[in-house]
Every structure is written in C-alpha cells, then in structure tokens.
Length: 145
Image 1: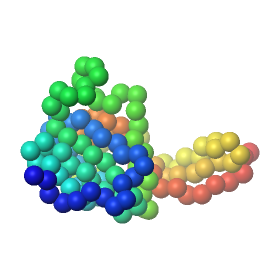
Image 2: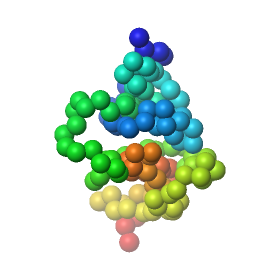
Image 3: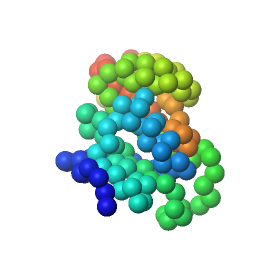
C-alpha cells in the first residue's frame, strides 16, 4: 500500500526515471534538490516528488519492465531534464554544500527563442544514476541582436 497522495494537479509532463538504488535517489531529490515526497509505493520502491513551483519527478527501482535497451551508467544518455525553480542560487548552494559535482557550473545563458532571446541562470548535474538534470531560473527576455 502507498503512502501520501498524488500531486493536485498532475503536471502535463512528468519525468520518470528507472534507478539502481531507490534510497540513494530519494535522498538526492529530497535533499539538495529541495523536492518533497508527494507519495510512495514502498512495495514497488517508487516515489513521486514535487517542488513548490510545480515540478514533478517520479522514479522507481529498476525491475526489468519497460527497459527498451541495455541499462548502463550513465543512464539517460541523450536526454536532459530541465527543472525551473524560483531561485536557482538556493538549489545551487544546497547541491554544492552536499559535495555533488556539477556537470556545468552555474551560469547565465541567453538562447534564441525565434523572435527574442530568453535568459536563464542554470547549472547542470547528474543524479546518482547519471541522468542529466538542468536546474534553471528564468531571468527574462531581450531583443535579438
């Protein structure tokens, strides 16, 4: 039987990760990443975690289901999961205080959005299984050069 309850509302898109160590992954997301546990299914070793800004992530201990190919670390090759937060500096401080290595250090980045540039402060790190996570705070838009 599960504990907790699903987010209300569910996000329109929720990343779900197969993980090699449920306890280690739960500590990563609910520790330095600042997520809260919405619900768990202990028998399946599954959790749904959320942030106040609305981000939702699910993960579960690998069980052989839904694996479309060999699972070799780092997991998630070719995919980046972006999480937008209200203050990226807070999450960055927690991640660095926990001694987690950064894949890309905290930076300000402006990208072409077609009719304008969109800016964000961001950093990237890998979760315990190597999934690439971008944590970002939107900082506005400006005219194209």
